[in-house]
Image (cartoon, rainbow, N blue to C red; front, side, top):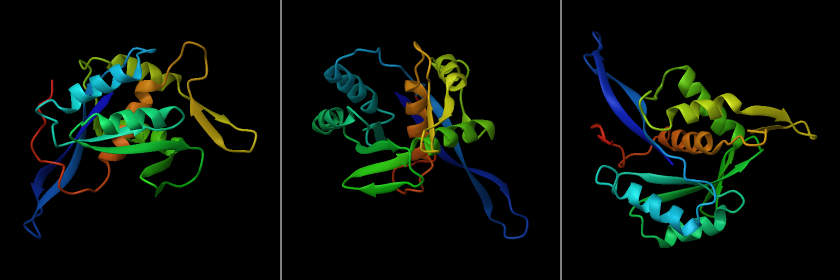
Length: 193
């Protein structure tokens, strides 16, 4: 699980128009790997616990990987009364994002490279003292791109014992945070943890 905070900050004054310049800032505020093999109902309980914290309650959107076994988990999350919107994403090997039937179809390449670019450009604050930061950086270093038999690209951690769970969670959270959606983003810090 990953929480990314998006805030609009005011910069210096434009000396020609006398308008305050604005910029978006993103900061990772929470990282947690749910233990592998955790039963889905327990995962849903943990998600509910996190999204109902006072700083997040009613101010967040849950983005979840609905690929593969994600459909039953999505059903459990929808029934869990989380108090937030849910944006289910099916990761594809395609070229474009699309939305149909309440699901987002997003190329995995776009998710991973979007996260990489945000980190490289220093658009995403990633505190070194945040629990899980080292694990996320290790997973990022182990991500590989491989060419498929059809000439496409596939991203993942390919060696046995490697995981990409936090990378996927962070990429999904950053993908959603970059949307230009009004009404759910504030200008004050969430003040999480």
